[in-house]
Length: 124
Image 1 (cartoon, one colour):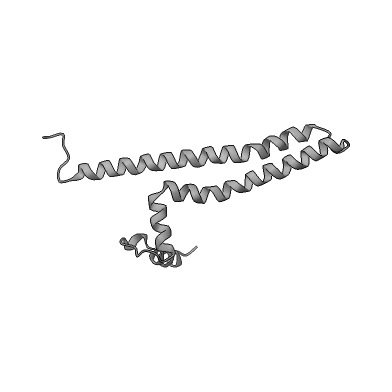
Image 2 (cartoon, rainbow, N blue to C red; image 1 turned 120 degrees about the vertical axis):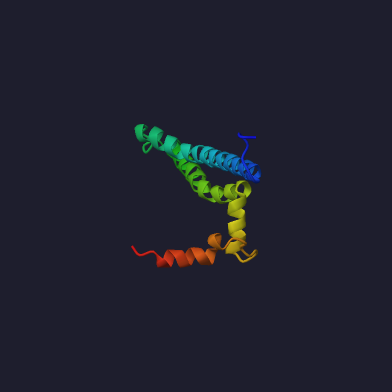
């Protein structure tokens, strides 16, 4: 019995480990999405830095198309992050519900109003 935690701590440790696992998975997914959605823009930039595409109409058209497609993917990364956090983060969803007034916060230290009060009290 000397090695066991006392008083119900085992359930909390399992919950903390589960939350850390969910956070790690969510951060991994966000990182992979970032790499996949931004890589075309930087690859296009590097490749077309060395090519003379301005004097060939066909290459110019391809460069222009690739610019617009890679630019859209780059901006899609910002939009996708919100949905990834909504899908993968239960704490993010709960805070979002509190922020939009769909749910009352049970924990006063995490409420939006206490956050704005604490931010106002900090002097820079």
